[in-house]
Length: 198
Image 1 (cartoon, rainbow, N blue to C red):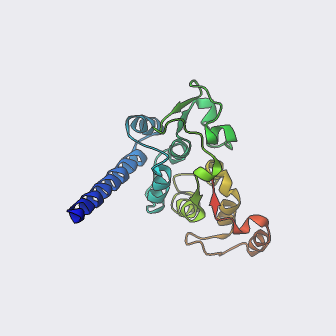
Image 2: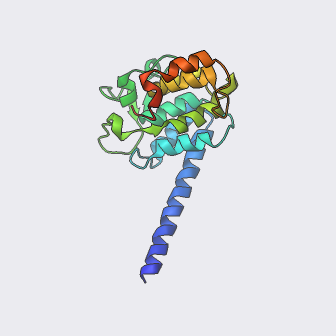
Image 3: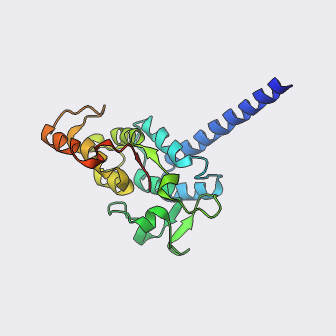
């Protein structure tokens, strides 16, 4: 009987994970950020379930071009749909936007279902390897779904790493150019940083 319950529990978890991956794939395939926001509002998406990280993992697995990717990532990272004035991904995002703190209903619409979300940096981190894969598949070479400046604006916590990738790396992460920049980068204190949060 315990074996049956264990198998049933495993099957439910697998179904839930497959369903969530499918939902995230649909969100990313939506034609624009407005459709994505509406789908997030209707869906059961939570920061606590790691939905943002799952989306970044999914994006790192495919180089297929994604329309309006930068603004979709902002939705998934912050959990908010911002008013036009706060939604320019070509400009650096500030802490208020990234944390969704101090914004009224006219400035930001909450999309995730987490009750009373108030994130601290430690609560919402992803690894640099995931950001690298995102950069390699969707920025590298200049013909991707985002520009270099946009990914830096969305992930300011990885600005130094992203600049290193842009200046020195190929799509595999190998240092192939600009050795002087790389040597200067290595002696800076952020060289060993592996994780970033809000």
